[in-house]
Amino acid sequence: MVRGNAKAKAQEKRLKKLEAERKAKGRGSKESARIKAAGIKVTCPECKASFPNMKIALEHFQAKHSKKPLPASFARYKEEMAEEMKRIAEQKKIEKKKKAEALKQIAAIRVVLTKFYTENAPDKLANIEKILGKYDGKWDKLEAGLQKSYGEKNTQANRSCQGGNSVNNNLQARRSTLHI
Image (cartoon, rainbow, N blue to C red; front, top):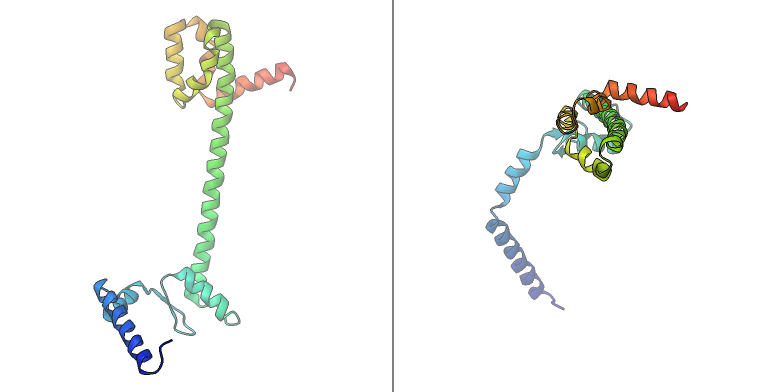
């Protein structure tokens, strides 16, 4: 254990070493002050503490100064964040709806393709998933390819694959015949 004068010398040596490392990294005391100053964007109006962004400042104000009324700039930020969260939630809801509709359409097309291949080419029934993946969203190209391979007469049943509404109508007609 180091005592007395040796302890003070060891501490000075350690401080010099740390200062040399900071300067080697290019962050002396002036440099770090400049970096901190550039990053400070918000100041608490009550205690004058500085924060890099409004979110952290708002959290600080609510935790440390909860009994005082929220400053106007913080209140505006809080309202903007609430609006942003609503907008994001709406976007997610719309995306979820679109995905569900796409899955319904693919399911209906799978039914039509299964029926078509059962009648025209039973050996290709195993490839239906691969075909659906290849022609995803390009149902007119799929129909054109089937017309080319099997002729116009055989692809009449597949014509409903082009649009989502006709596919849904076709599905509803099948459900009514099955009494579902």
